[in-house]
Image 1 (cartoon, rainbow, N blue to C red):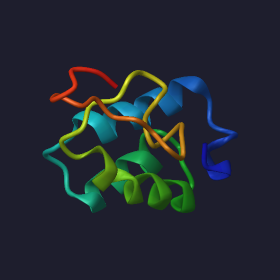
Image 2: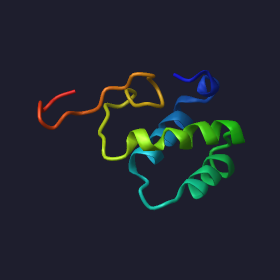
Image 3: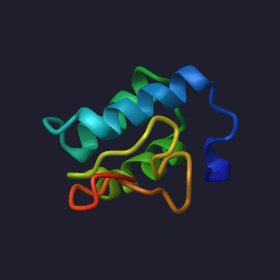
Length: 83
């Protein structure tokens, strides 16, 4: 995990991960504002989280195994039908 996120609670990390995984409607600025205004992240934390967004696009991760939590996250491979 990126050290910038180490002081966030598990609930906040789960919410950030959920937004990065499922929110395809908001643009980066809206997502950044949500992280700061609603979840209480610092601007630096919000920017770091939004920077991970491209790694989530079109990929499926196991809970706690996404780029937010792991530097070398492993996504689902539909051809191999596994992670």
